[in-house]
Length: 362
Image (cartoon, rainbow, N blue to C red; front, side, top):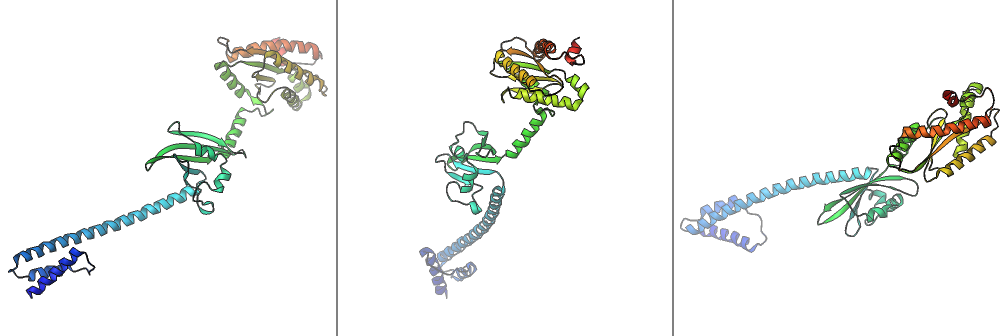
């Protein structure tokens, strides 16, 4: 019996050493075998005991590793579910999220690269069609940690882009978040137009003119400043009604707009008061434009009352000392007043004709 137990033990140990295929042996059974070995073989008994202890440790280690593997597997499932959720969320976003390798400029990731737009390499037709400026994204090199910039496509769509670099593996990638802000731009432009537009004429209002004038005086930008006053508006309002007065103003604005550029600032700062800020236009050229406009206004008049407007023109060189908006308006008003007196003498001899500026001066 003792020899048989020894043979079983040695056979098990031999299988372990040879790493041969075998069925897993019950450690408890092996322990029972080791106890049956006669005390006449003390060395073999000791080896058997150590082997049983070693195998018990291996079994415990195996159980621990199996438990950890199960935990890691569950953790990986959670991570994968989070990754799938994040991928789906980014795919559903209106913004483009594009990641470009810094070394070869290849597209590493794009949140639109899924579904019917899927492609393994490069950019899909969807991105190529919607992002006409995509080559700027691929060629972008960071001059700072991040940059916010704008781009437009051929259809007038506006895009706001956030670009930044991030480490990835052993290299660097450039991330671009591209948002279509066309509607926001349009709303902002509409609000701006409303804030700076005169509702009666559609040209700029006093607020815009004052802000632009303050800016140019502060930056000492040379320009030509014109102060205009519509002659006899009070007379037209009193004699023919305010609707006719509004038509008088509208006709005046239409004529003046034919003689100025889109880059010139034409604004209404009062009921019958207007200003024009000419850029890159000398004083004599501005005076010629206004003189031509005045002649056209008078010549094309078909109303039963005479029409005219007065103006004063000043050249601002940008080298003036302590020139403020108030001082500039005062000087232009004085020049305009001289023109108004001359217009009254030429065009408005009717006894009922009235002009608020002349009446106030008197």
